[in-house]
Image (cartoon, rainbow, N blue to C red; front, side):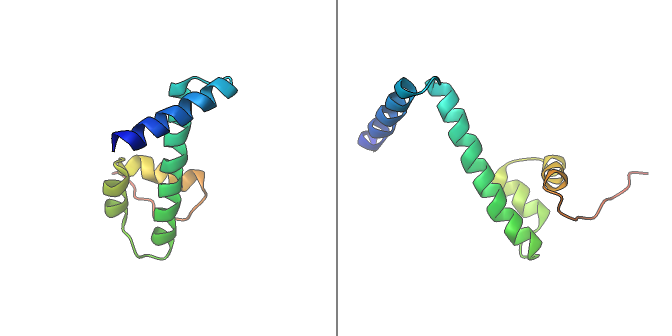
Length: 84
């Protein structure tokens, strides 16, 4: 396990040397990439009505409000509830 982590760390260090980014910036970009990938996979299931919002928010560890903001941003139709 530590060998794999060392290999990943070495790759990140090499990439940091070749680019103008710090190691932390590279890790943040990777985190965003994989989060967006996971969101897109869940959105496909949401569109097919195979996964509910509550299940998706548990999987992604985000709030429902943030999930609805993602839907708005990607222009995906969803029900809007009024708070009265």
